[in-house]
Amino acid sequence: MCGRYTVFTEEEIIEMREIINQISKKFGPDAISTGEIFPANIAPIVRMVDGKVEIERGTWGFPKWDGKGVIINARSDTAFDKPMFAKPLKRSRCVVPSTGFYEWTHEGKKAVDKYLFRQPETPMLYFAGMVDRFKGADGEMRDHFVILTQNPNKCVAPFHDRMPVILQKSELVKWLRHDDYVRSVFVREGPELIPTKA
Image (tube, rainbow, N blue to C red; front, top):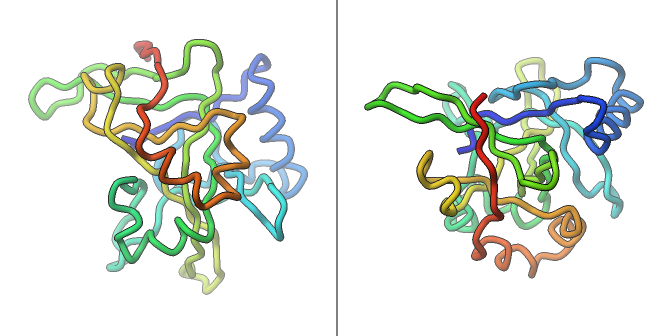
């Protein structure tokens, strides 16, 4: 994990609709992907800009050094030690708003059933992430983000050996602003999640 996640925009998911509306006002309609989010899609992120918490957009995945594909996740237990991740983790963390993430059951190497993971009381999930800037083929600099992962809790372990680092809404500003808060988030167990067959 995390290989796919969701940005659903149903009427009842008010928080996500507000995020999408702000993105549309800032960047125009169709500025991001919605529904099922795939690697290299453009999606909403929350980050610090000039000392203020802002809703922005970024491309999911840091480009690989050889230009073939993207790196979409970073292990929280080793991110501080990796040259690609250490600086953005210290200077440009972000939050990735979602409405859940997918995992699959397998028979051997074959994916069989797809499950959507959400918290029991809310359709929103906030992933801990980091953002950096990379030059595109057109020479323009663009924001790219990765999602941090940790060991799975008992809800996710039967499906995968990693899960996203999940933040509660009340923690978002602490994650973005306070460097000393980061490691405490990494060492705790993830929240209870409910898998639903998709």
